[in-house]
Each structure stands twice: as structure tokens, then as C-alpha cells.
Image (cartoon, rainbow, N blue to C red; front, top):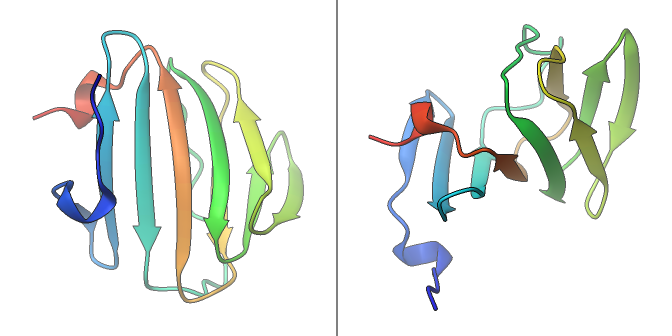
Length: 111
């Protein structure tokens, strides 16, 4: 059994105002992303990846953008992203925390 305590997981700065913490097995990855630089006036540029993604909004509010549709989400809401599908978010609050799960794991996130 492996347990991870949030405060003991090393935070990686992914850009100014955003950091992530991660854990993974051989086939599944969980990533906690904290954004501290909202709100934003526009969504981030869309991106895609070959991984399937399930995300949970733990703190704050966002607009989730996929397939030319925009959906406002807040704590307790989730979104799902199929492999290869362009998507993005727009932060609506100063602090947003997302919990992202990926399969297969994001090798590009592992140093």
C-alpha cells in the first residue's frame, strides 16, 4: 500500500502561478494542480494528449472548454476528456484546485 499526504508531496512549478503534485502506479496517475493566478479573462489555449483524463474541481470555479462548448464548473463537479480531444479551462476564481487522473500515466510529467 502506498499513501501520499498532500503536504509531503513535492510541488513542481509548471508555470508562474501554477504547481502540481502527483502520484502514480504503473497504469494510472493522479495529479493535483493548484492555480493561484486567477481569475483569467480568457480560456487557456486548447491542448490535447493521447491520455484519457478525468478531472474533479476541488476548489474554485472554472469554465471547461471542449468541442466549442463552454461549461461553468465548481467544487464537486467533474469533466471527462477522451484521448486526443482538444480542451482547455478558464479560471474564474483566484485559487483553483483540480484533481486530474490520467491513463496511461503521463510519462512527460515524470522527471
